[in-house]
Amino acid sequence: METNENNRRKQYAAAIEALLYVSGDPLTIGDLAQIMEISEEEADAAVSYLIASLEEGDRGLGVVRFAEKVQMCTKPEFASYIDRMGEPLRKQTLSQAALETLSIIAYRQPITRNEIEQIRGVRCEYVVSSLMTKGLIREVGRKESIGRPILFGTTDLFLRHFSLEDLSDLPNREELVPDEMTV
Image 1 (spheres, helix red, strand yellow):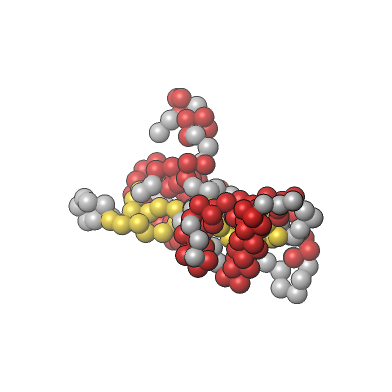
Image 2 (cartoon, rainbow, N blue to C red; image 1 turned 30 degrees about the vertical axis):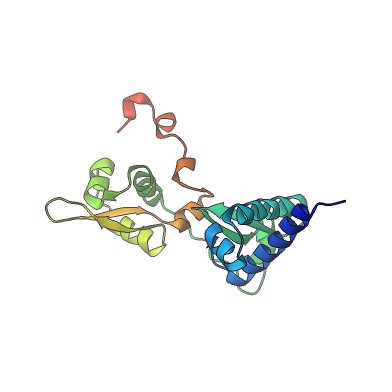
């Protein structure tokens, strides 16, 4: 026989599933708790329960966590079916230059365009503009120096695109670059 706590968690998880489905956009645990008038701990436990229950079953949907937010999504293994629908999803690929620039920003943020160019050794005005247009980076402020250059950082879309909950999930930079190449 199930306890009242398990029943309540299931009910909260079902409500969260409905909220995420209707929203379409990511919601924070705080948003969910406020909407449902429950504690953040209860909302977080219900989200964890929902994620586990969607992973267990033969379901086409899942819930992902990133940047302290949660969002409903389709499971990657069903992408080919979704692509066959009347309007296929646009897949954007990133050039090698864009990936290099994005990784520099991810590891060094906040960082100016000039600092990125010094690391890469080439101009990157177009690449930075392209990454901003794609929503992977954004302006995060201005550097306190001559000319007050723009500082760039990554976005929630960057985290979601690379399946990261937060920046601490990035691979350790020292493990990726040999000692003699560390910048």
